[in-house]
Structure formats: structure tokens, C-alpha cells
Image 1 (spheres, rainbow, N blue to C red):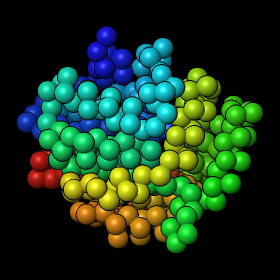
Image 2: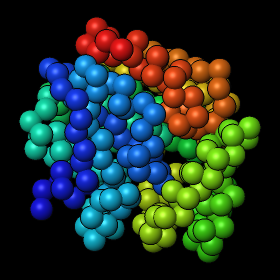
Image 3: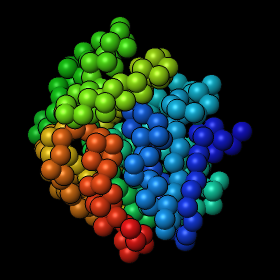
Length: 268
């Protein structure tokens, strides 16, 4: 079975340019439904489910392969190779922002531009670097997740969504978290929250957009500042918005920023 089949890859649209969307922790490719179709008017759009999520073949989730984001980066590279796509725009939400960064440095022929939505290279504070959390607090949070994943998901998902005035969005994210195999969710949570990719993002040479909400429970402003000071070719856009999932809660604003960054390749 090919990686395209294992990860339930979906392609729409047509054109000389391609854009690939990767979802974040606890989600699936359906989370892009308010954004991705707009880009299919002029480009080939690729969405897929990270291994272990959505319609992916979860029997292929190997704890050793996916013990770091390297396994997910290898999947992205394999998918682009199988689809014979090069010089794509890669859009990654949250933890997948680091995945597209890893893939971009390994295979710069495949990825020409990167858009990172609410990214963090490291959630843990480390001397002068302020990731937002003490490592001991992250470990404690993950220990709670280990004991009661469903309870953790029901409490955390609405806070991560950050759209208190639209509770249905928090419910959607909660449902997505709760549909994930708990063992996979616990495993990937440790990869997501305890990894340090600061050196990896420093190595990215391609033009990169960092799209952030001004009030994000997971990513403080200190992280945006660090990224702008340490990445080679980066532009920062901060939405006047709350939460960690602007492609779901503020799709129109997200589309506009992405389209402005992608142009002149894609005309919306």
C-alpha cells in the first residue's frame, strides 16, 4: 500500500502550482474544509490525514517510526514524490508546521514556500527562550492525559479552540480529539509537546509565513518574536483573533493572509 493510500490523500483542483495542507494534533484533514477549497480554483490542492488520524490506515501507526516528527515528515515527502509534485506551497497547522519545516530542509526541491499556522518550535521554557510552559508542567499535563484522555480532551479542546462565543467549534474539536485512538493520541501528544525543533527551523531557507492569533493559549508572543529573529526568510502576520485554530474559527481572514503570501502563484 502506498503512502498516498495509507494517509487517505485527497487531491482537488488543477493548475501548474500545488498547495498541500497538514492538520494539527487531534484533528484530521476535514478541518481544512473552510479554507482549502478556495485554493482549488486555481491550483492543485492536496489534503490528507496524518498517520493515526481520520481515515488513515491506523494499523500502520508504528510507535518507533512516529516517536519523532521525522516519520510524519517522511510521509509528506513520500506523498509529494508519489504525486510527482515539486515546489509546492506547504501549509502546516500547529505541530505540522514543524513537520513541513523538516520536510522542506530535507527536500527543498519539493517545497518552495511554507505557511506555518500557530507554530511553536518548542513549548518548553529554556533559559532565555520562553515557550510558554515549564517542562515539569508539560509533563504533568501529559500525565493527566495518560490517566484520563477523554476527560483531558473534553476540558482542553474548547480552550485550545478559543472561541467561547461559538461553542460549536469547541465541540467539534472535542469530538475530533475523542475519536482518536487514545494510545495514538497519548503517544503523539508527547511528540508534540516535548520536542524541541529550534535548530530545525533555523535551517529553513524557503520563504515562510508565520500566521498567528494574538491570543493563543498554546503559543505566547515570545515565540513569534523568537521565530522572526531566528528564521532565515520569515514574515509574521498576527490576526486580531483568539485561539489556536484560525483556519476553523476565522477562515476568511486565514484565506486572505494565505492568498497574499502565496501570490502571484495563486489568485483568489
